Image (cartoon, rainbow, N blue to C red; front, top):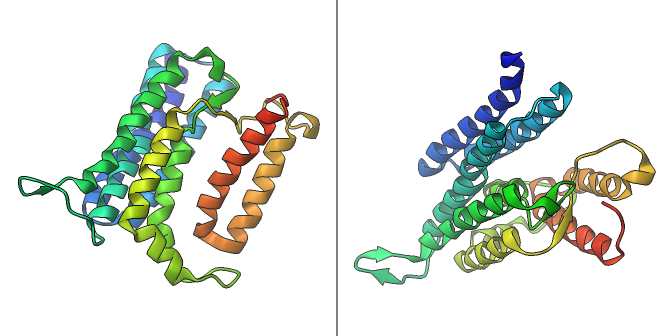
Amino acid sequence: MQMKKQIPNFFTLLNLLCGCIAIVAAFHHNLIISAYLIGIAAFFDFIDGVAARLLKVTSEIGKQLDSLADIVSFGVVPGIIIFVLIDNNNTPIIEIGNLNIIPYIAFIIPIFSALRLAKFNIDTRQTVSFIGLPTPANAILIGSFPLILNQESSFVTLNLDFISFVFSNPYFLIIITILLSYLLIAEIRLFSLKFQNFKWSDNPIRYIFLGISLILICIFYYVAIPIIISLYIILSIIKTRFKQTF
C-alpha cells in the first residue's frame, strides 16, 4: 500500500529530474534539449495527477512535492532560456559595475511562477479551472522559442527569417517576459484540460481547443505553439464572458 502511494510521487520526481537536466543544458547553450525536456516534464506532471486519481491516492507531501518540482521545470528553466536568448542577441546594456543587468530581467519568470504556484495551493477557486496562466503552459510557450528559431520549414510557406528575427529580438523577449509574468498571476479564469468525462456536451471547449491545436501543429509545426497558447487564453476569456460551465 505504501508503494502504491509513492507511484504519483515517482512521476513528480521525474518531472523534477527533467528540470534539473534542462538547466544544465541551457547553461551549455543547448536550448533545444532544454525545450524538449520541458515537454517531457509536462508529460510527467500530467501523468502524476492521472496516477493519483486512478490509484485513489493523495497526500499533502505529494501536493507540496508537485509544486517544488514545477517551480524548477516550469519556473527556473524558462527563466534561464529567456536569459540565454537575451544574453546572446545584441542586448541593450544597462550596467551596474561591469554587469549588464538587462538579461537578468528573465528571472522575473521564476519569481512570478513561484507566486502562481503558491497561490494555486491555497486558492479553493482553482479546483476545476485555473486563475492565471498555468506554469506548464507558460514554460511550454517559452520553450517553443528556441525550437522556432531552429525551425527550417512548415506545411505552409512562412517567412521564417522574420519569425526568427522577432523571437530572438531582445526587446521582444523583454516585453513577452513582463507580459507572461503578469498573466501568471492575473485574475483571468482559464479552463482546465482535465476531463471529468468524455461527453461532448460537457467538454465542447476542450474538444474544440484540442482539435484546432492539432491542426495548427500539423500546419505550422513549432510556430503553432505561441498561437495555441494565445488561443487557449482567448477561448477561456470567451467562455468566461458567456458564463459557460467549465
